[in-house]
Image (cartoon, rainbow, N blue to C red; front, top):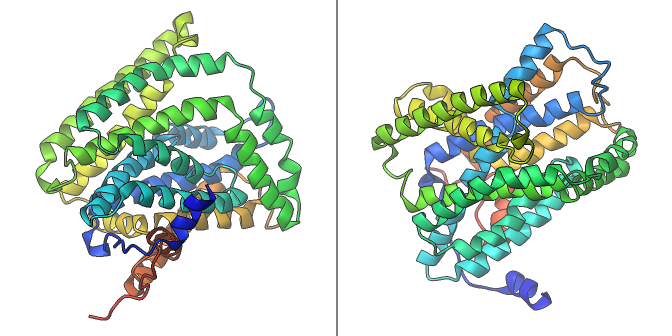
Length: 398
């Protein structure tokens, strides 16, 4: 292990990252949209955490807002990001291989440094997702040379198995979240070290030790990885402006599945079908909704609609890692005892408005930053560690 890490640090092979002007615009747009959902859901978590739902009586606006959030954003953002991670994995591996280097060693090193960043981000926010990408990224190496048919078929097998996994995990005793809730006093502390410690311990108990997250979420995440990898293999985003028929087909099929499953769950809930306790298809509805939203965005983009909005999403998506970690830092300063202490003390509109405000500011900051620099600051650090070379940060003047 020591020799492996040393080789990551000392290898002098020259890798060249994908240049900013070679990026796929629609992928950045989808990343930007997904990060909007991430900040909304992460800040919304602080509205719900530690709240006594037996005594809490939400008003009409709160009920409507919670319903819209659950339909449009809940679990839709990290699943979309997971699809894009799988796609990005394939792009990166092909880029490195095309330059005559070992893609396995390169990507392993890249995931190692992502894991380091994940530890830092976990201290900021207990809901870190970077660690999951880093660990599952190593597993994706096993499928690097697989065909589109292989990865897609495997994803379908896992998709069929996932409801049974969720049902089985639901029958197990799980104390992860209970242990996490016991750490709340750390987050309320005005000591920054305590707040960081809550983030790390919260990540451990709520995700690494929580059986639903450890098993079901990671299987769902890996399914999305495989879908993203498959999209690359079939060149889905190449000549994207000509793919309007395929995008429409995905939209209408996924929308139909979303409507069907929604109606199905409403009916079966009233009928009380016992088998759904053992075969829980909730993730099917999440996936279908995510694909409906994602393909809808693609359809609008190809049609030339909402150009300014999509331009903002694209510039945000180019600095995904920087913006994600910054959102969590801002959240710490607003919600923790070290900061303003706005835990669950404000109405729901405060958390949603704050998320939109932070996101909007980040859009303008990202646009300004990328007008002067090649990469976001965290992306630049990660790329230099990954490529083991000094990369120019400042953009050359035209």
